[in-house]
Length: 146
Image (cartoon, rainbow, N blue to C red; front, side, top):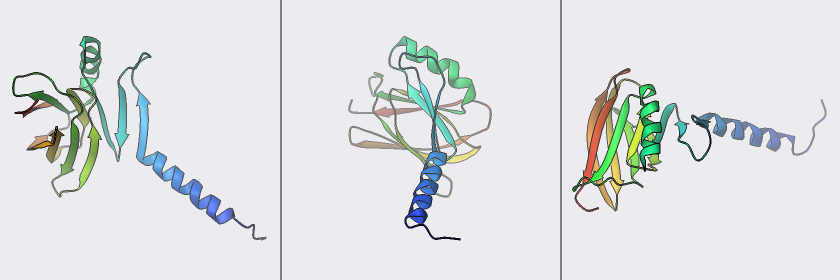
């Protein structure tokens, strides 16, 4: 077998790219016009949005495929977006770290116990929750400052 210079680094680069693509995938779940996109990172699928009635309707139609719904609002009840969401399992391993594109955040997690940290405007709110495999669990996060 003849050695070809640079072939090992090309194979390594292609292998690394394949691994990255396997860890993060994007799947369109609706038609066009900026519809919600379900994203999957390390086996956890999620989608966010909820700004406007069309987006809320879309997320409501998707909710049956998820077992966790996070709702973000200020103390007054006004919805907030741009919330940083971090979900860790019972061992403390972070499964998901993402930004919400609206006040609703849907996730599909294995049944178990989780610690959720939602950060908005420099303030983090933490909650420990349990989710099952089928029923949608809704968890509200509220911030004093909006």
